[in-house]
Amino acid sequence: MLRRDNGRLLETRSVFRTTAVNHIAYSVSDVARSRDWFMDLLGMKCVFDDGRRCSVAFGNPERAIYLGPSRDSGGKPSVNHFAISIADFDAAAVEAVLTRYGFAPKYDGDYGWTIVDPDGYTLQICAEQGVFPGAATRGATTEGKFPAGSAAARPGVFQATAVNHIAYRVPDYARSRDFYVDLLGMRLAFEDGLKCSVAFGNPEDAIYINPSRQPDQKAFVDHFAISVANFELEAAEAELKRFGLHPEPDGDSAWTVLDPDGYRIQVCAEQGVYPGAARDPFHSVRS
Image (tube, rainbow, N blue to C red; front, side, top):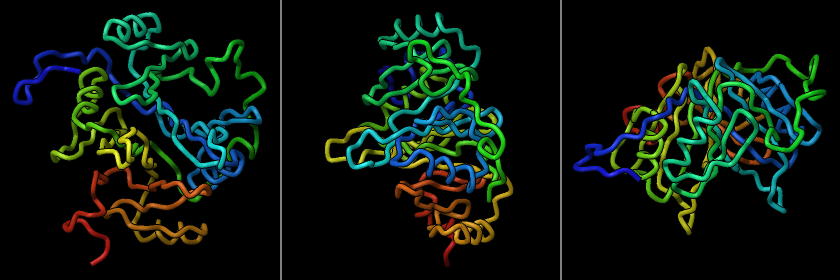
């Protein structure tokens, strides 16, 4: 990665400007069940469904969660990659830059490239629009895959507005920090010597970079968090319980719940969330 001298960059590679999380690719045991959960709880719209996988979208600019069948024989849920949108995407120029800096970009449709980040995790770099599940498959099309009526949109308990953060665990947080800041133009928003947060876009999305807890230190997404409009702590707790969930506090601005597969999802305010908020003695929802 980049050379540093006492924290000072000796070389800069901020050639891209990240604008948003484009999508989170989430593998689940029952796609239809998870689709309905995100729509009914978080007010997301189903914008693509081919009977095997789907995309639920929200926010402006639009973010999405791509739901597909779990690759694990036991149906274990996982985030197998996430994708970021960059400003002024030009497919040929982006490929050339990624190749020049030592990556091996793989075609993922006309609006995205897939690379492996320094921690061996799959990352897509995309245009702000035009991406959909399976776009890299030869002959892929969205024709006939746009739901309508209540299958496309219906009222939710909350209204999702953005990806508040993706909690990403890695072997070397400083190396990952440099990659996302220096190549992808993200802003270092929080750092305490053990972990950090890199932020981007408007409204702001973030990636929380923490040490891996896997025995082999393999990189993985621990959880992701969704911002909702008009978040009020006590009212949100009541609504989550009414929905049949068991919310756990995560600071003054978020609740953590388990989705139908037992995966951790946070429901958050649009601002006020940061790494370690649940353990901060100065910001506790419980006296």
